[in-house]
Amino acid sequence: MLLSYCWKAYFLHRQDGDQLVWNINKINNQLRPKTPIKDISFIDVREKHKYNYEKVFELKDFPQILVFENKEIVLRTKNPNELYVFYYDKLKN
Image 1 (cartoon, rainbow, N blue to C red):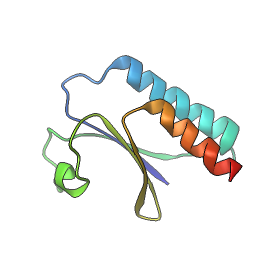
Image 2: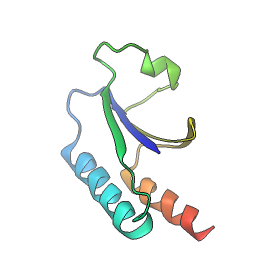
Image 3: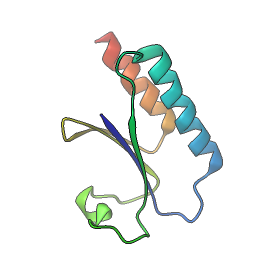
Image 4: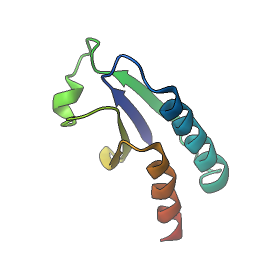
């Protein structure tokens, strides 16, 4: 599992960053204690990278949270709270 957080704005809203970390901790402790989210990438697309992430992932607005499983994007959202809902629903089904 890989979670990527891509942003272009000069300042990541601290509240969003705090909410993202809080949700990841909640997911790891409550929903996925045996298989926690471990790989998290924070990518500033303004910086030079080997790949053009805006193009590769068709990023139109920022910030974006992308969740990958088996090399597939299984969740794309701007809202850190949707991350918890995604894993909660997945556990229920």
